[in-house]
Length: 437
Ligand code: HEM
Figure 1 (cartoon, rainbow, N blue to C red):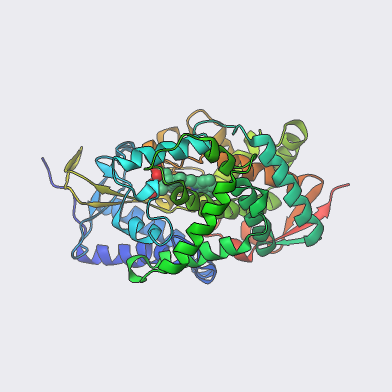
Figure 2 (cartoon, rainbow, N blue to C red):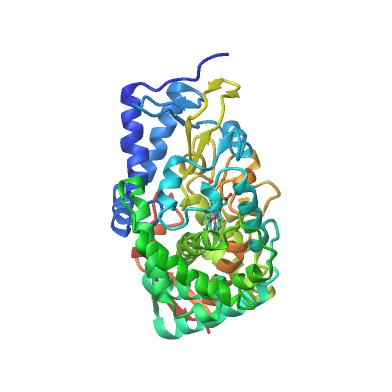
């Protein structure tokens, strides 16, 4: 069987400087706002996509093996290889990679994403069951939409005519604690702060010595909230589930709390896009007037397209557990595999809509028509909240849009007649809200 193509030392350096370092620099476990702003100003994500396209031109469909010393690292360049790799989880393409294990161990060492078989199977099944994977509407949807409506009402009363990401995020964190742990956790800002500190350590992976005392304190506090098993929250569902010792709910739930962060970013970005895209905003308003908050397919599609344009998990990582045959050659065991989502989502050599806001693609039976649009990854290790989280976000968007005309300070940042920027710094976005009479 043929050998997979190998990148030259120079191309490996450009891959590092243009793709990998900027992605790590923005922060993988918790974003570094200053770096996100810098990435938008310097157009770093667009440059990363161009670099990947240049590698494809030079090396063909790959997978491309880089020349990194001491590490066998492959980069995927072709859509069918993405499908093969994602479908092959947890073996031969394990989602438990060294980097993820060292980053997530700072706060959830027994999480499903970094668990080995057989524990992974039990923990994944637990998450699928709590989050009701593959159900478009969660069984607690009505209660969750109530929580969203209550919190959004308070936010709108407080923020007046201008909504910043900071204000939005404060509310978002409160409603996340209520949805995940119940009303008894609404005021527990300390829990979120502790997790943020641990995630900051996680950004440095094994380079950070860890904060074991803080981790124990955080996990103990989380256990107290889970023990309350409040009705109308995910903790309530967990409380009623039959348990096995391998499940380790306290190590699964931090992922819920932390993974809502990208949900907040995507929601705020989608609102900002609607503020400058009048036609889509009008469609959203019509939908809100006709359908219940838990069932808003067009608004969900707007969020999914904001995640396509600005994926919050840009690097999907896998590690081979055995030699694997591709149509172009054999990938040896213990190879690290990178799927760089922005390269596929923004590939203007293959997608006519690469840089445009195009929610309609998400309303079709097969979004992307076989092209990898993978904001939630895919296959057996896809995000189990893939349906749950867009439901919560579209409900919040609806509550903000209801009765308001949205505007964006600096609307030129998202001018619909131009390409959408490669990076969108959510921290510096400001929405204006005008009462719609
Ligand atoms: C915009 C919001 C979100 C995005 C874009 C997202 C994306 C992803 C992606 C790409 C993965 C796979 C990572 C990998 O393959 O290494 C993942 C895994 C996971 N996500 Fe999400 N996620 C989001 C929100 C959430 C929320 C809110 C929850 C829970 C309430 C959640 C729960 C999980 C869990 C438990 C896993 C691990 C799955 C496994 O072990 O197989 N996610 N998510």
